[in-house]
Every structure is written in structure tokens, then in C-alpha cells.
Amino acid sequence: MYELLPLPYDYDALEPSIDKHTMKVHYTKHYQWYTDKLNAAVAELGLSDQPIEQLLMDMDLVPASHRAAVRNNGGGYYNHTMFWEIMSHKGKKKSDAFHDLLETSFGSVKDFKAQFAAAAASRFGSGWAWLVLTEEWSLAITSTPNQDNPLMADSDVVGYPLLGLDVWEHAYYLHYQNRRPDYIDAWRDVVNRKEVERRYGEGKEMMQKD
Image 1: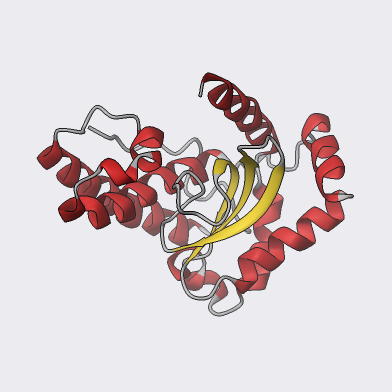
Image 2: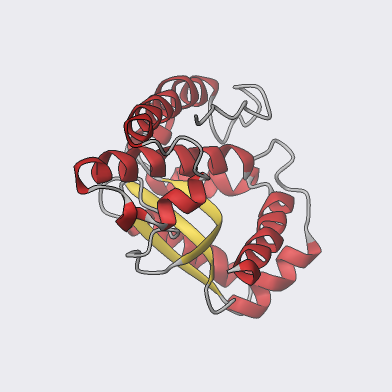
């Protein structure tokens, strides 16, 4: 069974970027919902012990009768589990390795920020913006609709998610209303750069095994 990952900080720890009320509702309502619905779907299929990454990468192996439920709720579970971890009240702590990697891949950190913000702001409706380690071991920026993510084989960019920003309205509307660009700018202040760097190493190890 898939379990809720405890928040690594208090509900108000990311203020003013993310307010306490939004964080509490996001975690206790939305994250709980995806977890419960995913567990119900996989229990019927006998897949409760499948690693979530593998489940999402092998979506074609899920029976068509349950595929939408597993895709939507499995994506929601994975995306949010990652989302809590890649944020921190100590987010501004510098990571030299991450900084250098972004400069090599995008020309400058400023250019990376602009491209990532554009991907998040231009995603129509609900979805996510991503920094991805691709199967070719390069970095790419993309966005996905709903609770899809780059682990899924039919994504525009397939690879290992290093950084993801939730741009569903429930992630920001209580505080920012329709000002999604303001939310994107404020969110950058709480990105846990060390965790993104750790995920880069994890992604490389995973691809080497494949």
C-alpha cells in the first residue's frame, strides 16, 4: 500500500511563499485523496507492492478498466510526494553543483528560471512544470497536463523528474487567486536545491540500472 509521506516541515514553514491554509488543505485533502484512490485501484489489481515509479512507467501493463484511475491518482500521489520534498524553508541554501549544472544546460541560471517560469505560466488549465533528466542524460524543461509526469512513456519529454511545480489552482488560488506568475516567482524562494541535486544523482543511478 502507498502511504502518505509526512511533511518535512510545519504547515506554515514556507510562508510567505506558500501560506499555512493552502499547505494544510493541499496536504490533508488533495494528497490524501490521491493516496486513498490509488490504493483502492491497485488493491483490485494486486499491484499494491509495485514501486510507484515502475507503476507509472509501465502504464500500458495496467488493464484498460483501471488505467485512468491508476494514471490520475498514481500521478497525483507521486507528484505530490516529490513536491513536498523539493521545497524547504531553507530553500535558498546554495548548491554549487546544481548551479553549475543549470548554467551548462541552459546558458545561465537566469535563463533556466525564465524558461521554467514560462512553462509553468503557459500550462493551460491544471498541470505541472518540470525539470527533467532525460533518457539521453540531458536536462530539459517541460510541462504536463493534470497529474501526468515525465515518467509516463507518452509524455512529451520522458525522463526522471528533478523538480516539479504544481500549477493546479488548489496549489495557489487561496492566496494568489488568478496571479499564477506571482506564485511561480514566490515558489522559487522555497526550492530545496540540495534535494534537486540529490534527485539528479538518483536519476542517473536509475537509468544506469535500466
